[in-house]
Amino acid sequence: MIKTAPKRILVTGGGTFLGDNIASALLAEGADVTLLVRPGAEDRLGSLRQRLRWWSADVWNPASLKGRARGQQVVIHTVGGMKADPSQGLTHHYLNFISARNVANLCISSGVPHMILLSAARAPWVPGSYIASKREAEAYLDRVGLKHTIISAPIA
Image 1 (cartoon, rainbow, N blue to C red):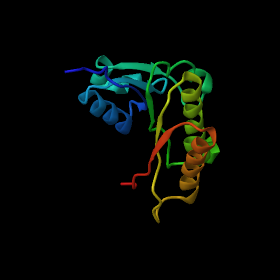
Image 2 (image 1 turned 30 degrees about the vertical axis):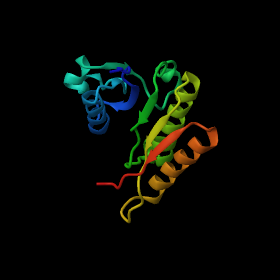
Image 3 (image 1 turned 90 degrees about the vertical axis):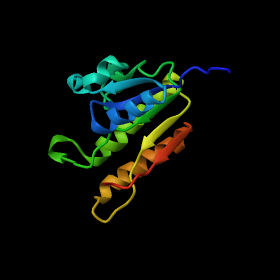
Image 4 (image 1 turned 120 degrees about the vertical axis):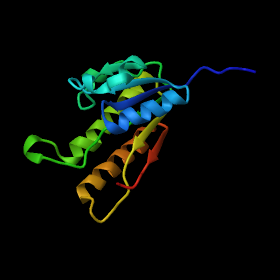
C-alpha cells in the first residue's frame, strides 16, 4: 500500500467557531493543518493550540500575512463578517472583500495552488451590501486566475 503525505492546509479564522471546527475536522481526516489566528485571539485556540501549527496574522494587513502560506497546498478562507460598523471603518466591503483579496494575494505570492472561499447564499434577511461584498470577493478570485472553490452556504 502506498502512503501519501497528508495534505497541507492553511485555515484562516483560528480562534473562531468556524475556523476551529474546520481545522478539527481536517485533523481528524489526517490533514497537516496550520491556523491563522488574529493577534490577541491566540488564547481562544484551547486544545487546538497543541494539535497543530498556528501563526498570528491579521488578514486585513498584508504585511502580517507575508510568508504564512509557504508550502501549503490549499488555503481555506473563513474570515468575514455580517455585522458592519461603518463608524469604526468596518464596512461589509472591508470585512469580506479586503480580507479575501489579501488572502488570495497571499496564495499567489506563496505559490499556493488552490483557495477555498466561504461565501454566502442570498436570503431575504441578509443585507445586500454583505452579499455584494462576497460576490466582489468571488469576482476577484476569477480576475486573478487563482484556482478556487467557492462555498456559498446558506446562513443559519
